[in-house]
Length: 300
Image (cartoon, rainbow, N blue to C red; front, side):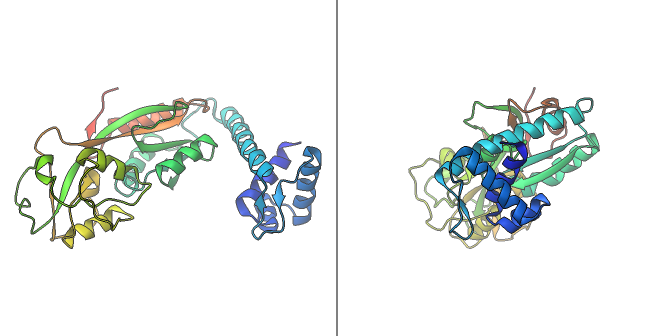
């Protein structure tokens, strides 16, 4: 078994097609097929069901592929450490970010990162929290910007800021003219939520209480939620940064909470075993020291 064979194995798992996998590996299809057959013979097991289109891993193949991904990730880490041992901020970082944060925070964060570390290259991937955690675990991501808490003791966490929630009300709502609100004043309103899988959905339920009237129509984005509020379907909570950019609707009123405003905590996370952790601590410190308006800095 060689690293090259494992690389071909992962490529076929990713592409599901021998030709596409071979192209990605810059080899011929026959070479890829021969090398994978050699690997299967050495293991004494079939790793792919070739009768399917696209080809799919067998049960044994899925387990081997998962281990192969970890091996490839560790190999890349070793190479990365050697390449950037003397300058941890001159490297490429694959950064995940949740959809309810990305469109509103990334423009600011990227500007800070580029100014602070011109040689740092960020490759961005916007995904749900569960997928980000999976990709961090298998080495497909190096770090991520997530909302806490994150239940994974294999990750290091650097909290950056607290982002308050604000109430989004239909303009004709009785409380819309108010300068501030209390959460208790909204307990009888229909709460609009994002679809399952968004961490912001769970946070809104925690803030507002799970036992309340919910609208069955669930949005796929914060902008859709905003549109639904404007139609008078219900109310929702929006994170502060999402209320500062994007479209401004005359039929939606954004109202802050009077005191002890509910919020979410945003952090930079990375694997504890990741090479050059200084890259992430320095990036996190820069982001925390240069925050956009509307959020609260967390002291180191």
